Image (tube, rainbow, N blue to C red):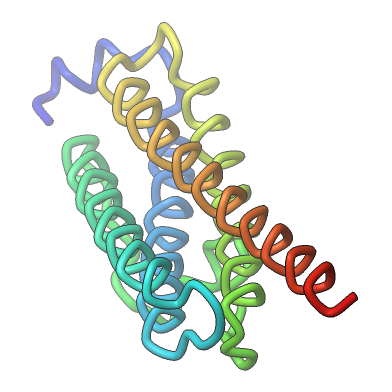
Length: 170
């Protein structure tokens, strides 16, 4: 970003870059969590859920691109090593050691809720002070809210399926 672009910001740019590096780290961890979870997924609704998890993974990767571009525009340096992602992230990466669809979805739901908090924080910090970052944060936040809803819907469907099976057995 040009000097004028940074000068017009009414906030601590270094703090914002730190927030964006945390978000960048979280996006990479979310990407991998979705991607690997889709690969090991087992159980009911697998054929419906697996391709959607891969779509979510791609969307997380696109978020990472937007965030790293913004860090660059602000004159910052993005997190350069995957080894540093867990250090920057406030979202926990949950190893998909249980491949059951419900377990994978719950892990991803936790990640989405953490991402929602992150982008709400960035939006609140930049509102009225950095329109470009604010708009980016709102766009990503809307994606994360959509992901959360989809996962909640799938988990609800699994609960309904579980109840239907109980009725059949009675």
